[in-house]
Image (cartoon, rainbow, N blue to C red; front, side, top):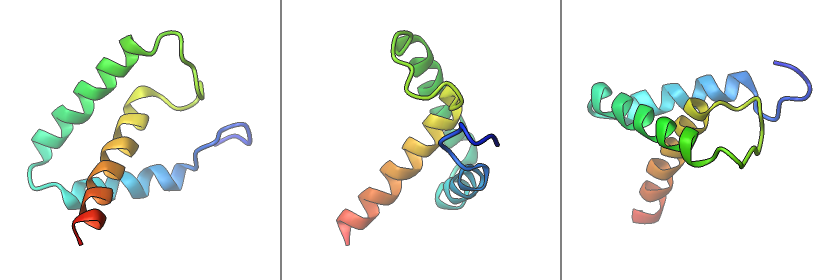
Amino acid sequence: MTKNNSLDFHKIIYKTEELLNISENRYKITTQVASRAKRRKYEDLDIIEDPFVKPIIRSILEIVDEITESEIIKD
C-alpha cells in the first residue's frame, strides 16, 4: 500500500485470518461484518477518518478487536 495509507496490508490480512480462526461460524461472521460495513457506510457519510480504509476493512478490524478484547477481559 502507499505511504499515505495508515493501515498495513499485512495487518489487515492477519486480522482477517484471526477473525476466521476465532469464529465458530464463518457465515455468521461474514454477515455480521457485511451488516456493520453497510451500516457504517451510510451512518458515517460526513466522517472521513481515513479515505483509504473502506467500511468493510474497518468493520473487520473492529469486530476482531471486540472479540479479542472481551476474551482478555474475561481472563
